[in-house]
Length: 363
Image (cartoon, rainbow, N blue to C red; front, side):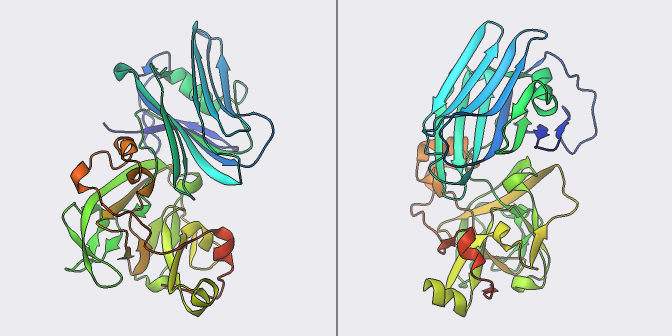
């Protein structure tokens, strides 16, 4: 099933194209036709609070009463409430959101013909994920989808919401790949374009070992928030060509300062924490959507991509709870191929820790 993102909204603007963002405006009508399958995603920066917050609230009376609200309760419960005519739907998902400052992706996916839906919350910084089934989910009409992202009178978003995005098919839930498909990955036969890697291939790790690829895949996401592309610039980090990644893709830091402060030969950190350095910055011009690729190996490893050291795909959030795998980017991976040992290739630094390493080399 091909997925197209058809609308996005930020605090500054809303964009809607039923033919697909990044494509020419097609002849697809905007009306009461239902999106039988779809996704609604919010990226939210949450912090402890004592009152419920309507992250997204939409309501309309024409041509019939309809509405959608995503609410965050003080105890971390996410509530999805929808109305279509005389019908109402309410789903609650218990989480620990709001216990500290963190960024979360809140996603509602639906497949109305299959009478199947999911409500998911994923915290990428900590790999925490919560999901629940939505029974007999309500689809959105194309008119309501357009209103949610463009009608600032009938649809309101809280200041904590970085973006809202709508797709015409269920999107994968949980961790998302974070490397450009044109990147070159070291293999025993030399660099190979990431999008050409297939399961069963071997890649060369930073330590020189050949490790088998268990899964190779991609996901298309709105180029906003944590999904906004960043460019790591050559010749920093040993790069022989610029490398485009998502803001959450992790790269490796090394040097005497790393060993002194953390007692480790090498640590990793998200690319977004390097924006204060000359080696990384936002990709310009920024497309409306990005397709990111990654590879899952037999063990979580540091691989060499365009000459830089980056982490292979970290699927631990769903691999540690295998019942969630079927809703993730790893859904097409045979259960017998899933890695038996899930762990980190290097200790992960958070933002405040990464900023202390102003003198560290990267590599």
